[in-house]
Image (spheres, rainbow, N blue to C red):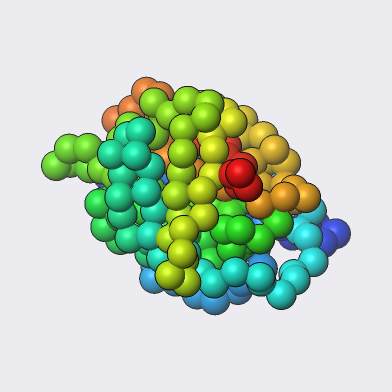
Length: 205
């Protein structure tokens, strides 16, 4: 689960700390801070993509996420990387988390928010993420105001076949990616085989 660097390229995985929940994501890193270590971590293979040059953020960090169509209203944890370059999942199954080494929601580029799909106790914060459809609203609270995004697609990918350029590549406008697990649960790996990725764009109207 190490960070891969080849000619200025970088690959990062998102690991899980609990049996039965595995998140795989590969956002470009602009933050090398360490996060807590993870035991029993499960990660997905990923291919490197270009890392855009860091720019000064125009918006404050996100604090809350609301997705009315699936009943989500949650605070946002700050997600960072551990020493191996692995992005840690949210500590709570009831909270989503924002990857603080990437894009801030509202800035140009894809901001990444991840959450667990379930736990041994039952459904978690993103249990119904796969139900989102085009046009559904996603609201991000930050700095005392709310930004609204609209879903443009909900996709499911095998963890070793995630189209990293589409999910994490630079975009000219403000976009959002919500990510969790999906598909079949592999009991031998204690991990889901797929990822659900929701693509959303900022609603400026």
